[in-house]
Image (cartoon, rainbow, N blue to C red; front, side, top):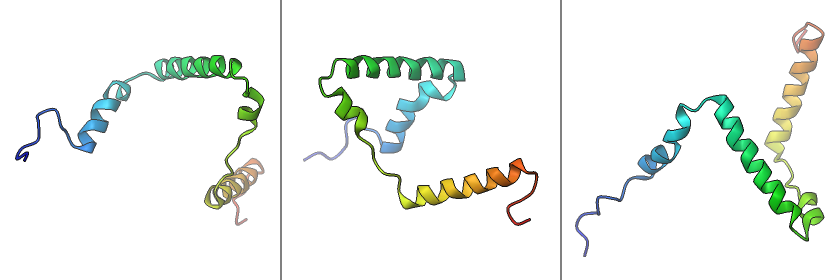
Length: 88
């Protein structure tokens, strides 16, 4: 029976902290490079997939809470465009 965990075992919090550490101080430009690279890789894989159109047609519906939040934001944005608040 193990009485003490090996030294390489860390808490979930510590594990996540270690994984995100390189990204904390990354510039937005560098983050953009990484995202663009991932998008290029995904596009390349998708181009080789015989089910490409089927994959592209897949879509998960937005939860009702997200739909409500978007409606609220659209209302706020439309009122801001005309220079008045939503309760005006």
